[in-house]
Image (tube, rainbow, N blue to C red):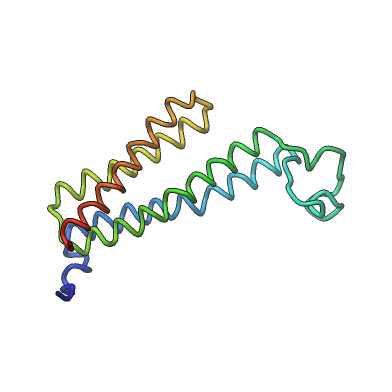
Length: 157
């Protein structure tokens, strides 16, 4: 059965919800590396590659240890890696979910639960909360994506 054009229209509240959430998550995914760069520049450390510790306009006074792991910088990198593991799955599952024409309330619950859980995960990771807290937040985002994928399977099977 072909997808109706109206499904991928701003007039469709499910698609509209997905677009808002997807744009927010894409911005999160693209801004986190800039946060990492800002942290590296602030502490002048946490660089990764040998050439990063050479003298340059942005590293006018190289010093010993710039390539060492720096927890302040590395924490931001780990947040980014976690985003890279999670957000693409949400973008794909969410789009397929929209195509199945789910009820608006279900879509809003699953989509905004994902976004809220990822925001809470970011705060928990940034503030160095226990793994249990981060895992709780991650679990809600993961369950939301799994629920979308299962819904899609149930609709097309």
